[in-house]
Image 1 (cartoon, one colour):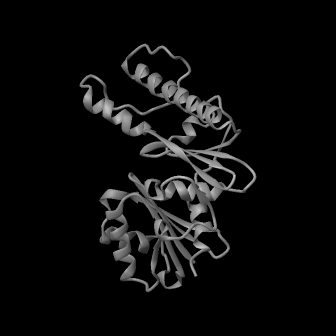
Image 2: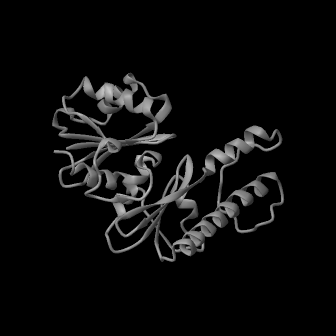
Length: 248
């Protein structure tokens, strides 16, 4: 069995994966509040047999959280904890940008869907809203826009008269009160942002793309944008499964 983990700015997802690439268990927790005791409890609660783990691989954008997890695992098992950023990925993907400037989760996503035939745009609704462009076997670059939840919380925190709001799909553009007005602005605003950026990518590269969406608000927008898109919530872990084959 393998431990494969995606450490994001908001959440950390750790999966136990079989040698046959089946996801057996998932553990999710807040990245920046994790500690050794919490990890110990989570692994015990999920009855994870650490003595059967053969490989450990993480992609991470939160170094402190990664160090805490590595410290925890080092006390439990002897296997080395590998990081995507420290592996040579040239046999899997060509990267046309400065590798150090791209989150390892975004590279994992690209490797996950790459088939050397199609071009892909991967739209990830995380702490930031990211667009990653994959042309055949080459990671071409991407776009980082403000995250939906982060932007919504910032507005509520900075504007005294705007309450905390749960974002929902709305049918009408014109709001009749503060809550419906904010929901409309965020829902239709991000739907427009998504379609516009995708169209600009197509225009700039003169390519057609398959679009894949993932992350927190992907369920909300998957059927609300004009662009046809497929939905995949396990894209990062599936990328890590591919990358794990490099570890001997």
